[in-house]
Image 1 (cartoon, rainbow, N blue to C red):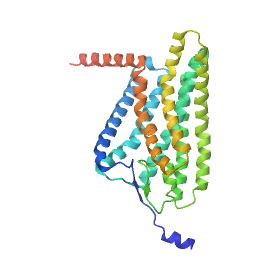
Image 2 (image 1 turned 90 degrees about the vertical axis):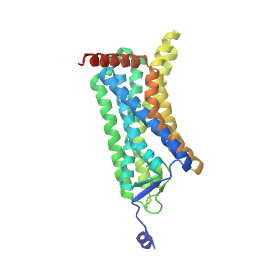
Image 3 (image 1 turned 90 degrees about the horizontal axis):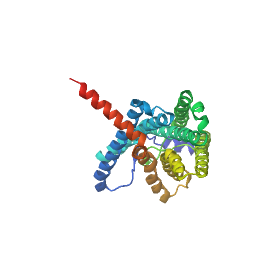
Image 4 (image 1 turned 45 degrees about the vertical axis):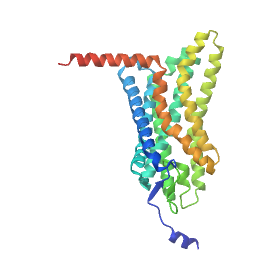
Length: 319
């Protein structure tokens, strides 16, 4: 009987996204909305990358991490939004299994790398506020490069393992993905084999590679807040908090929605809410990063004016 069932299985070669479940009449509006979000996200993050690279005043650990985060967010948005925009514009929600696994690989890498980047940025702010005398000696150029290299290498390795194991499961039966992207949970439900062992391995990898950076981020901000509270002057407290408030907002937005999506029980109601909350960390967080860091950051404003002035001078000297 088991052999017969296996023989009758139809191997899936393509998936169909259900998307956000939006009516057809809303698709033109959603296309324009997400297109604007994508363009603003790319423009904002690329602007930060250019400013960090071009202005020597921003050649500090904090802005080095911010430039890497902007690079990551550009990759993040470009992994998800182009396919989503194509589906909204043409109505074609098909994606091949290989393209789906590729999208999940880069999507998963972006999540894993961002957890390490946020941890590195929180540790940088911890040293700057709680251990200022040791900041320069610890957060040197070599250590910054090691943190960044570790973030990217660990993210790429862990997701290579996960995607390799996921591809071994094969897919059959329904080819409907109740999401707007290839995520792990909906893909697990479409596998032919029992995914219990796969889930255990993923849980172990998640614990090893995501819990430590989360705990480092959490403990860093506990120490930062405790140090800020002990500062006597109001101006001193405001200045100390202003240096980390932008990063804290991004951390809360990213981890808050991520925990809701992946930690709560999978029910029909939560399944729809999870898609809504997924928009926050997959689409809105890359959009919010440049807005939060540029609108509230005087150093970035000054760097933008300096770069524009240099650009104007160069144009003025052209024959």
